[in-house]
Image 1 (cartoon, helix red, strand yellow):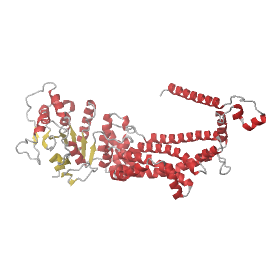
Image 2 (cartoon, rainbow over the protein chains, first blue to last red; image 1 turned 180 degrees about the horizontal axis):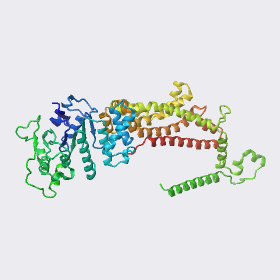
Image 3 (cartoon, each protein chain N blue to C red; image 1 turned 90 degrees about the vertical axis):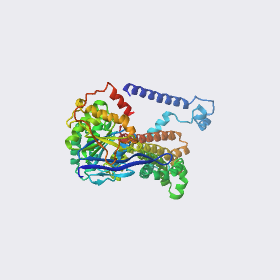
Image 4 (cartoon, chains in turn cyan, green; image 1 turned 60 degrees about the vertical axis):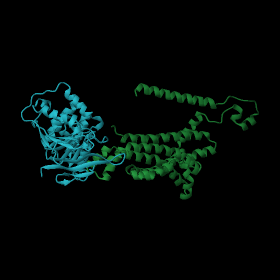
Length: 304
Length: 279
């Protein structure tokens, strides 16, 4: 299967529990991500989605199972997987250019200085920060810092981009702009992305496939939802799409109720090795518009 | 701070100095002839007995002495009569050597302790035991083993400079943010490059704080150490002038020691500013 860039094969994470024994955060997790796919993972806090991302990044090791990237089992962090951290993680003593160039120089160790700088400048320009190369991170707004984080990750031309709630600390307007740019850049370059989010609308806008994780402990991948929205969707207009509410309701229903009950009452025929692939859509459903505030209440309940 | 506040502070500082000098001058000036006595006898007794003049020199005497030292700070008229500049230079040299040796030892060991929880635990009891020991307590041991008083003084400076730098380096290295280390890990940065490009700049402000504390302690200790070992140095100069009953030179030395200490501290403060980064 040359198409699968990432294959997560039966990984688990267990910690020794306080009163003896073990706590299983998640187990028997199987997931395949194809080249060029944008995958978003949704689940409640504590289900281990960040741990899965850290395992993919090589920063953490699974207690069982393996992860295969591009045909090879991973053993620790590597330059083919770039991470965009939740807290941007820029080096505050380096300038914007210094931060990006540090990554470029790590990727191409023997490259001449001029080439490193040129690549770094190109990556900075790609995220719309040309002109701010010599600023320190402390002089930038939250959104600009995260742009530098994205530039640093893209500059090393990784096979996979791993994002851990990259936009969650930003205000709504900045978040919207950055989501748009992230989608544009990833589509233009055919970037494979694995992203964690707790924002349902973010997942609907960005993802080709949305992975739903049940609550921990003992979390599983409940199902994988294919995004029925057209590929050329525009952020401000997705809620006009006939499939939008069906998808959104499906996701929120999962977060509100099914994520709790799934583990004890899995649907008949559920096989963790092949989580069901859900396709919503077809003919437009009845325009069932939620009452004002309903969706938000669900969201709050889900996030709480 | 606004310019007006700064000017006001300057004015208050000057006022305090003027009041202090005036009180000092009044305090040590004579009260006039105290009693009638034979002029020959009065000459023998000196101004203290005859005019109630204090043996303490006044600010004008000190000013004259300082001027004298400033005119010729580097004269050398034998082992017991050298200019204050030469004495200060000796002290600064000893502090410099002992301090640099401490930097060379403390920062690598501090890195080791900061990066390895095992070494941190293993070395902690020794550090805790040795840190509170007065550096001068090492002096007899140093004199016995090194058999050279000058090098012993340097060793004492080394020992007293060591601990603040060691502890601050270890703390700074241990508290480098995990996410910065993760950045290095995801970029496959090797251990040596990581130490120099991530850990060192991240820990540098804390390390410099330790270095600044250390230079302050070293300058405090050198005076006492040189009083013990003698020969040269500002500490020896103070003690020698006390033996000469030249209070005016003792006061001059106090001013000189204070000034040099201030300059050393400010040098480190400037270095600290260079490595500090805003977050």
